[in-house]
Amino acid sequence: MKKYFVYIKTGLFLLFVLTMVSFTSRRNSARKIKDVKITFSNEDNLFLTHKMVDNLLIQNGKHVVNQSKSLIHLLELEKKVQQHPMVSSSEVSVDVLGNVEVNIQQRKPIARMFNAKNVVYLDKQGQEMPLSTNYSARVPVIDNTKGQIEVEKVVPLMQQIYKDDFFRKLIVLVKKDKEGYWLTTRVNQQNVLLGNLEDTQEKLKNLKVFYKYMQNDSISSTFKKIDLQYNNQVVCSK
Image (cartoon, rainbow, N blue to C red; front, side, top):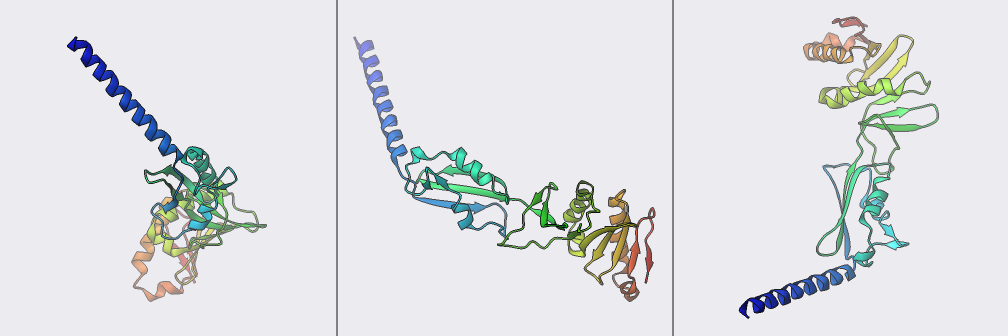
């Protein structure tokens, strides 16, 4: 008899637990969204504002705040935020207090490219992204107004410049003419001839060594052209 009594008690206990879980789940689903919390991962300069992101959080024709949690489709919201041209990745969730949390990683521009008809950023992957009305990134300019530059070929060069703090501060312009690719420096507005885009890593290395060596030499500021197109040579002219 005791054996059956234990089974009955266990069954009643499990029924109680299931009832409480069901009740809590229904009550939680019926809760309304209280607020929205937006964070930008590791970003100081925001191409997006909190308001711009908040305006994306629309479902069922209205903002998510004050809607029942059961009506909120997180993946749909996440996809909507992800589709914004300034967003690299996003995560949307609801916390235990009923707040929608949005975490955003913005795209990072490495260059601003002037084409014949428009101006765009190039991001770290070499993909075009629009300019922002909220913030202007301080990145090198690519002058492609004459359409001479093949974007997919110049992207590796821009990535190398972006990864090196020295070159991010030094290089302000990339252009191309019949002689090849040129860099314009922030220091003394000097023109650096790369020629073709082969061995750019070695050419940039030589340029850095040259600047480090000549930084205390006043003569170096008088050079107008620095030619790097010959192997392991830096040829300067006034």
